[in-house]
Length: 348
Image 1: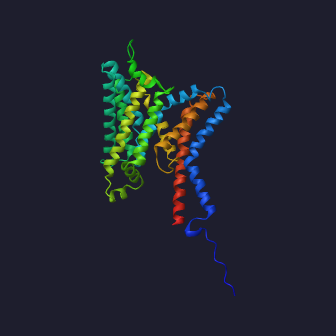
Image 2 (image 1 turned 90 degrees about the vertical axis):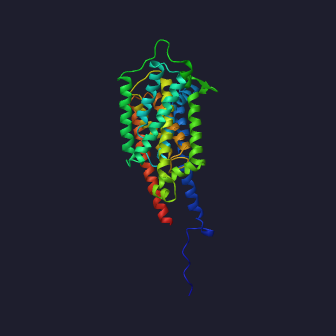
Image 3 (image 1 turned 30 degrees about the horizontal axis):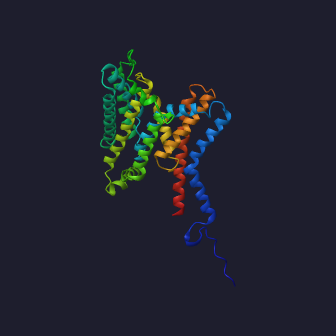
């Protein structure tokens, strides 16, 4: 009597997954890693075919690089606290305060613009440190802590401006200051190079330095980070400090762009920044916030907004697009995390 054939294994030689399963995993990994990059190219192609005379032009590319530079900088800035599992909701209010404070120091107080910019960036970094201290040492959820400090920053903005705008005199602002935003380099807007430099710096920080690995460990399991001796509070405060530093730089750039102090302008940048950072966590390094993914995500949002704008969308289409994208991204990220968890349990 012959024995029944052994059951078919789902793994190949040496316990490796079978070819079909391995190919499926490889395909899913490629989609997760480069899918957003492919979507960027697809959106650009669709709008180029739909709007062949206006969209695929150097003017449109320059406009995208210029107008989306500040949202991109903010998105990269909030990526660092998100890596630790925290959210800095004060960035919009901090941006508004930073840019009106620069205008106040230059226009009303007569400060040289380099000193005014340096003072504002330093103060914004201090605000970031305070956010981290309140959240970590005060044991207050970062959502609530930064929302509270953001409201206080907005109050400071109203106090400084008196609820009105800060308008330069007839002589205007120093040309060297406005050139921070208006000038070009190699035929491209200078703000695009700021974004690229910041993305490279954060990529090195998060992917190549021990500090970045510590931040990711804190974000994934803060208790385990404590057990292995990582000073979680110190590094979390450092993450908020980086966010504050970036917000200060973005505030200087916004002042050079607007050339007028508007106390309510910063709040509009909060949602696009988080949409870019959270969408970026689904690309390049799926499942964790990363600088290159954020850069690709900002490109997707920028191309989408530019395309629907040229199609004649109303003013309310921009917040609708950003809000809808954020909801979809959070939903997909949650689904992806649950799927990875189920897959890991099943394979264990």
